[in-house]
Image (cartoon, rainbow, N blue to C red):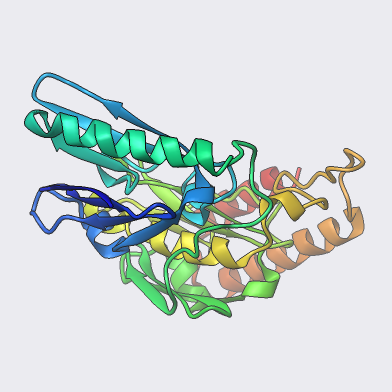
Length: 295
């Protein structure tokens, strides 16, 4: 057993699995504490490195591409402190950290673990049900459907459409960008109908606009990961991508469907305008955004 215990957390390697447990100290980000313990099978690991510095160094684990739904959902955009595969280590424990890294690398060589991308997720992602309250509303996922309940501060268009319920089978992809405190983030659920839509996050009823507490909004990555873990693995996707193009032929499929979706979105906007939910200015702005998105 190779183990290192730090204020930031604990790494323990038993020869086949690296068990990563976040620390309970207040300096450990809420996201890591909420994500909880992660058991990483050796076959999911690409490399482990020890990065020494004068006062405090870092153990950093690199996973094989496609092995982890968390990395797939967040696309490497998690803040460094929130990364569960990074451990801050005090300088006087550098020798232990280097030993742990060497033991894992030695096992990788002995077991001949490839570095190529995986064809299936090797980590399960967060358990369900999972629910997170964000600045734009509460998003929940029970394993079969996503539900968004808008906050009182959400855009009028979103609140007027009511709760958004999306079946897992209707999802193509999840897109996530964290709120940095300087720029808003978003959590977008992409369906065949919304692939072509480019509405801004604050007006898109399939998107949570992340503009409030960075610490709390970061937890939306839990939902993004839980959904991603249950969608087809990226290596199996041979059909249309999120840019609306068929990856096999390089063409834009379903132009008739594209036109039907556009008409339906415009009809919905027209009804909101007639019912007085949207002002003339809001209707004109949103309609222009929809037409640009479908252009």
